[in-house]
Length: 327
Image (cartoon, rainbow, N blue to C red; front, side, top):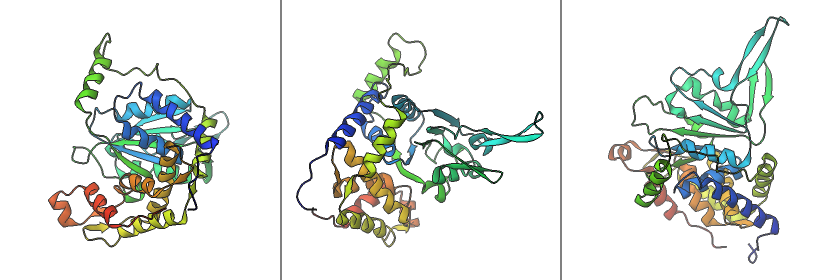
């Protein structure tokens, strides 16, 4: 890359708009700044995000608050063991007045679909999202019905150690741009959370009325176009390729990341760059997004699984071994 590029006015304006979204979400979500930033990266990149954490950490609240900030259509599906695929995509109904069938659209026909506790349903129902996530359409009776843009799936899941969970198939995991982990809040944030929910309030529900709409659907589409247009040096492309390929022959990794991981690294890095107000992607953007992009796309070898090695530690060691370009 020749010289240092200054952010364009368009990029600066886009950065400020997405920061206003972050500020509105912070009115409802205490702490979890890194998680919120990852959700915003997913929005900018037009990718789907899988959010994992134990119940009660505000995963659903984050998605609801995000949807409120841009005024798009929002739908929530609570995944349960008896949920059917048609409960997500929709189904054909017989119309006695016409003597034919009509299609009743399911909750997938929205801008932001919250698939809550997605791993509480078996694979048959989880698979209902495969076409929705990849093709952004639903096929019924030979007809392809397109979904509105923007369209995102934000799915929450509980750790697999909990009872009543079903692992997501690898083909579906790969369609998520990122997997984001939600941990416990620190002591100060938990104290703020306690005051927010209990002082002068009945019940334990969070109120989202004070989260303002600061964007429109058209604004989100424009932000996604700005993100897609950010500059990526060929050396940064090569760096992303080396990271993904390093997962395929590394000791301790039984199943490495496929080519979609390479694409996702650059897409997520572009979103990260825009959050920082940069008109170009740096190697550090790729490196910072790599754990979220890779952690659900690799499988550890049996010996590391038995030892209980965290997948993020394996990814961190891999990133240290892959040389980053100097631009």
